Each structure stands twice: as structure tokens, then as C-alpha cells.
Image (cartoon, rainbow, N blue to C red; front, side, top):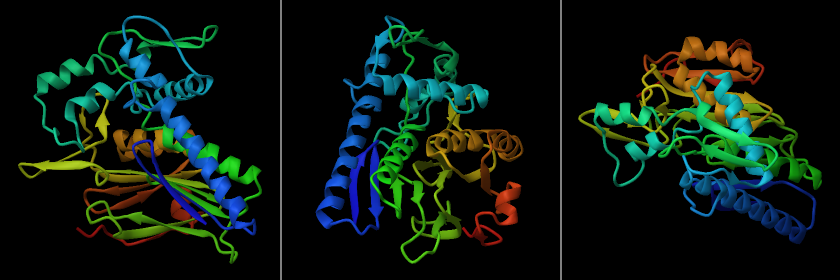
Length: 317
């Protein structure tokens, strides 16, 4: 049985293969949808009444009391920012709003606008008070965006809930963040396609086999616009507040925790191949880079076949 619903700014799909009665499966999936919608109500930067919306509205003013889930997830986000030296930064929202990529108002801002916004992108300016479970952004104009981590967190929560409820086979697709439960009902592993970032959605350049693991891809094909022959994508470099230019088209990472992979793949893209592969090793995940020069590069476990990866030798445009 499969269920699709909208949350976290994207479509999400949960498929379970179970011997449970149909009504039981339907009720379980409905409960999972409601859990996701509640998380979205807490964590969305687009909802003024969410915890994140309230923190952003009070930037530079007062501490904002938040739900335990929000507090914990923000702590996680800052830990990934620290580990990546800011390549992943949950305070990136002012830069995202400046470019408006994926919206009708998308545009190429002036250099001085990016420089001005750069002062607001600073994960070190997020303050926590554990006693009151509250959060403050130090400077007016700062804003949080957990879009780079919330989908993965929700996926981890839902996968665990499904397993606790007796599901032994299933797959979740939360806006491209993939999580698997066990194997398929025929005993086969899950085979997940990797999108060619230079072609239409559904054009697969390779595949990865998963068993009780997660897979996340960040790439230039997800949201972008083209002006004067230049592609401007949504992966904003916190160091420049412009779309990252590191010779990378997409990066895919595999591991146990989708929340961590969401943050790590963003950082891997921003860091580029050399620094990124080193960071992947430090974080204990496997990474695969598709590069602008057509090359495909991977960490050792990907290359040696732990995930039974099948790839074309070059990226076809």
C-alpha cells in the first residue's frame, strides 16, 4: 500500500508491503501523514506560526520558547554546521530569499547585495537556553531554514515508527530523501536510481542497492533557472551567498541516518570533491560525485561495491 502527501515543501511517498489487514495499513499510513504534517507545522520556515517562523520573526529581539523537537533538531543542525565549518548552515535563509530560486521572482542579485546578506548567514549567532528551551537569533534580519535537514529527520522518525508497528518491508521517498525498510517482499534489495543532473527527471545515470539504509542526493537539477546561458541552482554557498561553483553537478550519500545525510550532502556539494570526500570519511558516510567534466568519483566503499553501484562511465548531456 502507498500513500502520498504534501509536507516540507515537497511531495512525500510512503510504501509498505505488509500482511496486515488493508484497514490497518491505511490507518497506519494516515497516522504517519499526520505526524509529518505536525512536524511541518513546527519546523517550516514558510509558516509564521511555526517555531521556526516565530524565531525568525523575533531575530535580534527576544528568546523564543520552542517545542522539544524543534530545540533538539536545531541543536543537531548547528552540530553539522560546526562539523562542516559552515558549509552547511541553517541560517542560510536570507540568501535563499535574496535569490528566490524556484519562485516567479527569481533573479540574479547584485554582488553588493550578496555581500550584505553574507553578514546575516552565521550559525555561530544562534543562541540556546536549555533551561527555558528557547532560541534566539542574535541579529535582526537573520533567519533559520531547516529545509536541509527536516525531511531527513521526518523520514527517520516515520521509518522507525513503521518498524515499531511491525512493518518489515517498505520504502519512503521524502522529496528525494530515500529510506528503506528491510528488503522487498521477494527477498531482493531495493535498487534506487540516481538522476542524471543534466537531463529531464527520470533520466537515470546509475543505481545503488540499499537494505535498511538511506540515500540522499543534492544536485543542480532540483531547482534552478537559466539567465544569459548561466544556470543558477538552489544550493547556495554560505561563504559567498551565491550558488556554489565547485565543479559538481550532484552528490549522493548513503548511510543509516537520513537526517544526517540531508545536512551532509549539502555540505559535500558546497565543499567540492577533494574537501568533500575527506569530510564524508570524517562523518562516516559513503559519497558519490557527478562532476561538470563528466567524471564520476566516489569514496572507497561506493567504489568497491558495498552498495552494488552501477554507473555509466560518463555523464551524457
